[in-house]
Image (cartoon, rainbow, N blue to C red):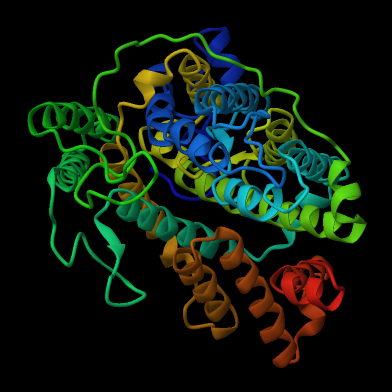
Length: 500
């Protein structure tokens, strides 16, 4: 399949649409079929359905500055957080598919939710409603930047090689997420770097499930079997359920979160639930205080928090939509995704919607690449994924059956597919090669897409200045580099200003 430029189907006169659905989503015109779009939507859902379980564990188990948990109670209500997480993800993913006709799914952003839980809501005196109010504000600001064209102008100003580096870096980032979440790579007990499995060895049934799932997907791909990623996830999940039923492996942690079984399942224990359908509780919706944090933290501290959230959302989505567009062959001659303005608008609205739904900022997910790998080329795949998220509000017990070890092999394979774009970077030109290198390596090494992008931009501007080519730098890149320097220096700035 083409990696850059227009889809192959656009090189000649597109075929006539078969029906209204085909015409609306341009399915035939983009060289796809309804079956491929459905399969792609399913694959994307299964690779990111973990967020319905993981988000409650991150934001639902941390008390705010008053000692209350999300929802206002004195004890966690993970089911309520899970229901709201799935609902907002479903609605915003459907909106993305219908408005932008792009195979991109959205859900609560990992990293942003942890930042919100541990660095915002837990500040003394802060409430979860205050913290979610900051997210809504950030979403409104970034939506304004999209509507004025500023966000798209920034995106267009980025050199093509840096955009490619962003895609490659995200590929490595996705691969390391897959290896770590699957337990194949873990932090070494004897040093800061990772090691293979447990103590340098592959131990435990869950790791076997991961390895077999990864091997199955790879073998099906080299045999050119369509649906390899989705079939691999489903097959590995079935195997995991059987293994747990026979071996009684159990989870890695106990009820308090303490590690008691290193060779156990890392998140979900794959057992069939007692109840497949449950009535969702959407009581979290609308629990936010728009300006509450300003009174509790002060204007400067609140604005700095909004700025931090803004930058993370601003550039994470840029990288994600380029990566997905490149894999799907949905980039124009300048390396920009089709309908990029609409993509950015929906993504910005999703940030505010996540705060309004009390589940943290929603953002575009790189796991959408799993669906693209299955042939998804239109927004119909996003609609399918979104509908599945809505069903997940009722089927949360069933969604929790899929363990990390069964889903994450797909991320490793997607990382490989995205890594292939590295050949598009001119490694002989050090002025672009060094910023590209920093962008690529810092994403997986720091576990942050934003850090990688920021380091690349700052290095690009600095190198051009040193080489006497400052006049060739787009003025927006000066602004971006300055903002990233401010972003990286948030803590020293807060210290100078006397803000805790």
